[in-house]
View 1 (cartoon, protein in one colour):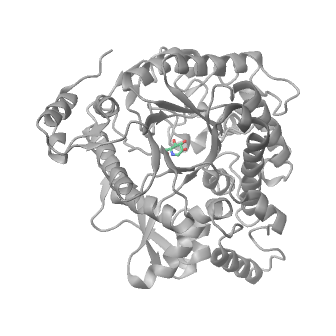
View 2 (view 1 turned 180 degrees about the vertical axis):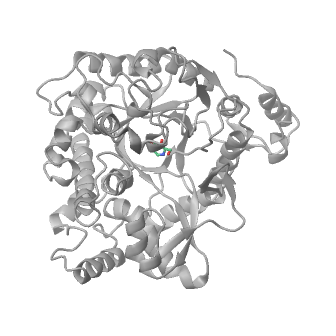
Amino acid sequence: MNLISAVVLSVLVNLGSGAQNLTFPPWFLFGVSSAAFQVEGGWNASDKGESIWDRLLHTHPDVIVDGTNGDVACDSYHLWRRDIEMCEELGVNVYRFSISWPRLLPSGFPNYISEDGKNYYNNLIDGLLEKGIQPLVTMYHWDLPQSLQDLGGWANPLIVDWFADYARVLYTLFSDRVKYWLTLNEPMVICDAGYGLMGAPFLDDTNIGLYLCNKHVLMVHAKAYRIYDEEFRHLHHGMVSLSNVALWFEPETPADTEATKLMMQFYEGRYAHAIYSKLGGWPPELEKLLTENGKREGYPYPRLPPFTPEEIEYVKGTYDFYALNHYTSKQVRKVDPDKAGSWPYYGSKEIGADMVNGPAWERALSATWFAIYPEGIYKQLLWMKNNYGVNNIMITENGLPSFEPTLYDLKRANHIRNILEQVHRAMTEGVHVLGYTVWSMMDNFEWTSGHKLKYGLYAVNFTDVHRTRTARESARFYASVTRTRTIPLHETMDFE
Ligand code: NOJ
């Protein structure tokens, strides 16, 4: 299928006229993203084990807005050839996907490796490479084996060893061909949503379990990084990181500056400071605040489990690049902690601050929580460079949600263009951005929003047994960007 459209022509014409389109360097990686549970389906195919999302959706379908589940999803378990074809149509350099831990290790442990699981990922990896597309592999995108949840999951410190075993299997099987690895996707969501009734395992434990999880995700990541560093790097010369989700926060008024700093630490610093800062460990102001809050409530331990000096050193510096998932921005408003109520509500209460949309920021269709503020990513990129001194950043997720199934999604195409303009701006100001991957290649199972919320460059027909994928206008636009390595001037984006 040829995705050339009027948009591409406008880019080319514009290039020919010598107008100032923005060009990305040849090494810049354009990509698209997905995650195993959201696209694969085949939830019990062959010898696959049960994941915490399988369990949640089969026992509590009511937690999903439209009552759907991930049993079939996009059926990528069978349609992976078509997925590769779509990557080709889009002209991307990388495809980010995740491996389902219970598909590869049905018991959660390496006592037995599924042949079918292994073949599935080998086929996908080899198929991509044949087309010149680099696999960017997330080891864990939220689908923990239920067997490990039954043993305490992310609250059990033994998860550090369980994950290390899993990571070693992955490196052994695939790192001859996979050069980009992400250990965990959005630990913020693993802990804050998983222990805050927003995602599997759907626990209500925001005083103890959530903060145990906070420490364990960092230790898990560090150990998986170090295994690569010590046992595999000299053989395969790849790169390892973890994807953090970062909202850009700015104060609503100057009086909200301190609260904004804490909000930044709560959201991003809890999962980044230990790895990227020179100091290591928890962000100091946040650690102090949470310890005081816990004491006031009569808890004998600090909310954030302390790191030993050895652990601080062990976690610090465990990255080869900073992987950033960025979607939206918020303004921070200091309020009475008892009246604070933004998600995550406990974070808001701990800090005594709410998140609001900037008055001039447009909203993404009816998703009111999602403000469209492209400049946020520019500010975020500069902040990461200046705050942590990291200057090797890959944007591993970015996109625009919609409740509309329309193929004529000009808003999404424009959004991608405007975001890339801000990425380019940061690059011209000295931030080294390795690449950018769109979330998502196609509509998929959007967690508790089921199939209602759509992010896809391709629409998927979920009522069709063949799960037909159809390119949207945003796919055509993105294909033109990847082929020309250029984004058009704003005025050329008038599709009408
Ligand atoms: C972050 C997650 O990594 C992904 O799974 C999710 O679908 C997107 N954001 C959109 O919400």
